Amino acid sequence: MSQKSIDLRGIGKHFDRTQVLAGIDLSVKEGEFLSLVGMSGCGKSTLLRIIAGLEAPDCGSVFIGAEDVTSCDPSDRNLAMVFQSYALYPHMSVRQNIATPLRMRLLTLPARLPLLGRLLAPRAVLDQIDAAVAKAAETLQITHLLNRKPGQLSGGQRQRVALARALVRQPAAFLMDEPLSNLDAKLRVHMRDELAALHRRLGATFIYVTHDQTEAMTMSDRIALMIDGRIEQLGTPEELYQQPATLAVARFIGSPTINLLAAEGDGEGRITVAGEATGLLARPGPLTIGIRPEDVEVGTEGLAARVVRVETHGPDRFLTCELLADHGAVVLRQCASARPARGDMLNLRFRPERAHLFGADGQRVAAQIAGRVAA
Image 1 (cartoon, one colour):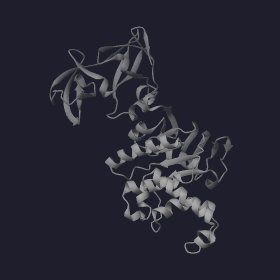
Image 2 (tube, helix red, strand yellow):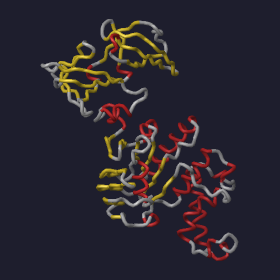
Image 3 (spheres, one colour):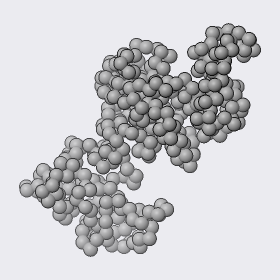
Image 4 (cartoon, one colour):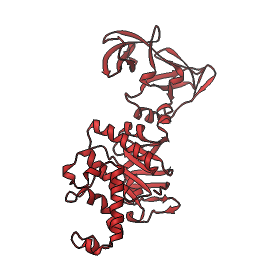
């Protein structure tokens, strides 16, 4: 498969007077799995449609490989798009659905007719289409479904058919717009694994749109987190989780969400939370400190808190604790064998090297720990 890079340069888009995309610059590498993730209305689906040629940008350029395709029709971009709704033809068999892109490309209009087509179409072309369909079906493990109609398939099977129909075209890249959102939770987990495995087998370029951070974190090589029509941060899943560039990224990535507490830097830059020293040094003034639930520990001293809620999730327990003197709430993750119960008093602490500091503008603030720089 001939995968290609995709480059977006200064992509802007308005609907009426509402700005949807604000000068997006993005380079997707050949063979990369990149996810566009964000809340509904952030512009991720619009950006995907601009890449596909289904929407025209108000400004900026789209490059596939070295070619500027901004003005090209969707059919000339050699991109395969997989939609949330699957968009299968209900009157056609799975075999016919998968073959449709190739029949449209390789056969003349008379040769596509249901009855006369087999007489008018060149035998070599029909054999080529049949072989491509068989190979795509084998790759997606749906060979046994080729003679069924879409109405006879489960949601996961219909999704595989839609992927096979995209695969058969041998596109320069796959564009996927929330393809798993119609599936139940268990099937979504299974299909995430299948999509990731398919990407590894094909080595193809994938651009995947989702509002589900778990999908993005588990499948992607890189993630572009979008907020209000711009890319807030672009990086690997590990970078967005461990080094959020802004408060907005820290809030979005992670489940349970990151703990955010008001902090203060004194005249010497010593950071405190609820009057307790944190071991961090940064700039003076009001700050926000972020701590992931797994980085909060129970100790003999620290922030005094009362357990107000306990949730068990398999091997983990999540404790929601209210800090005394109305200083906020903290969620911490423990193993299921831990014994704190609702109403218990605890002292909470965290390792300073695992904390994240943000200024009043929401940007990440560098801190020092015992002479070391904490990113």
